Length: 264
Image (tube, rainbow, N blue to C red; front, side, top):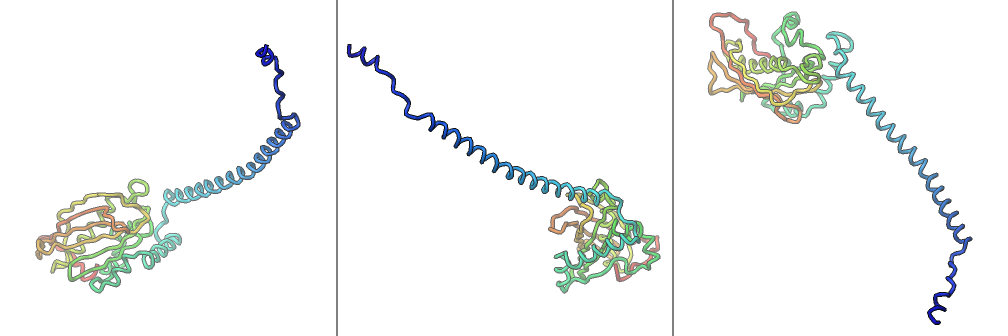
């Protein structure tokens, strides 16, 4: 009896009224609508920011590609002269190694090919066909007579590339050969000589449109009045070694060569 009465008790009605549920639903809908409305401007702001960033990157990449793959300036043109002025200014104010060498009393700064006339320079590979901002845009030599060392600062232009953006190994070999020869010829009493042997190890890429330094030293113990041994390292502006080389130079016995003189 008692149990039947318990089972027959009416169920308790829910305490939440219909009006409360309605207010709750309206409040949730209003909050969601407000959140969606706030998210729309933020979403468009992010899109505009991303568009600006990637657009700027695209324009920058396009300009970089144009500068790397466009035909380099013709030597002697107004564009070439302008580029050479920029290169010269960068050399004067933008390279710490230049300021360091200028403050070292053991080094003397020189231009290359001071012994040659303008007409003769046009017949030389490095001062003729490889001249201008597209080639060897700048070459300066710092000579240390006490230690028989020289440091050359060279700008490699885009016109002497092998692979895109990288300086041709043959062009590098030419510049290295000349710097080794400078140390050797300064040692020879005859002030002249030729390359007998040249060994080059390419350790890292050398990129066009950049300055590099060539550190050359004469091996005074092995060198004589007729033979000279020298070594050279090509370094980037952080001091990282990109190329290592060594060379043997001799004074020819049967071939009469013009004396280079006291300059470079």
